[in-house]
Image 1 (cartoon, rainbow, N blue to C red):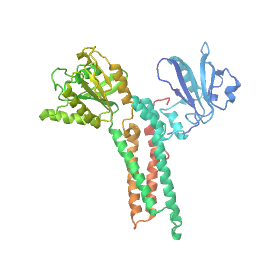
Image 2: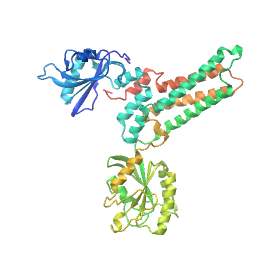
Image 3: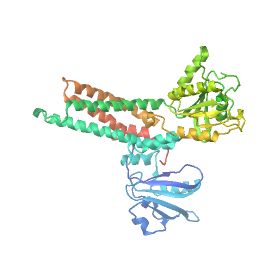
Length: 463
């Protein structure tokens, strides 16, 4: 891999296709030299002598072009750019043939085509991003929904990087104290007490083991959120399922207990994307097949991102009490819940609604009354973090899991060595150094071409 930061590179940075504006990115070396003689800025000398980031309006004079091309050149002349080196972004009309012509001219004048992810690779090599944040850039680009986007943005902001950097700093200080004691071993000087040493190693080990569990959960987690429909039999769940899924996959009947198994569908509804599951109605005296369905329903509750509990408006007083009890039990099993009063189409519109306690809205899946409010409620719930595993992007978890396991193993050995009276501190220092080496591979302070190829080959060109 060529890791030179000096060679100018250029690529299309905006999405392919026609648009009002297209962006070409140029970075490395003296980017202004690549634009010399064919970019004419309106501010003249300011373009050549500018030392801070600024926007320079002007025109590009392409060979064989009949008229100059209006352009805005966004210039970062110093190392405070995204890549950590002089950078220019050319903002112009988003006509694909025009963008291709300008890009070809950039290449002809000395800027080679950028490889996939090379701009972000340069940002990493320049210390502008660590490896976790570089992966988060790809996570932002590839996010399928709002929740994945928030997870990627959190990682890009350095939340996970900061915690791992703090761990690395603590282990480095611990190793420094330990090795200082080895230098003065004949004087019997102790820079860190044995009890404190064991305590700090144990804290680090537990922290890494928690992250390892989170990364394992993240690798097994779904890329889409899951919404589970639940409620008493004949509460209108199947009708709502068909409305949200846009199909007649669920059998709708006025007889209780029509749904014995669970149904699932990938839903793209009013800007929301999630997997929708319709569970069996809750039956108290469940036996045989019904009992298996009830067990399956409980498992779905536990795995759901949002429980959508349906309480029919047609319930009598005894059924309402049962509905309250079972909703409380179901909500306790779920991460988040939305309770809706269903089947409004079955009552007189002039009738005063008696909303059950803790209900969020009232709807009719038949007439679509209240579905806008339901969409807003689901959007709010699905925008919330889905548990601690969301600290990891899937690609980060896959890359880091082996290193985390090695760190946990090294720290476990270090903890045992520190507690032993027969082992020397030299072995303890070796274990701490091994943990630090694997931690460096996660953060990118220690890297190989193989690691960089694995990460940045996933990027598209121009990022």
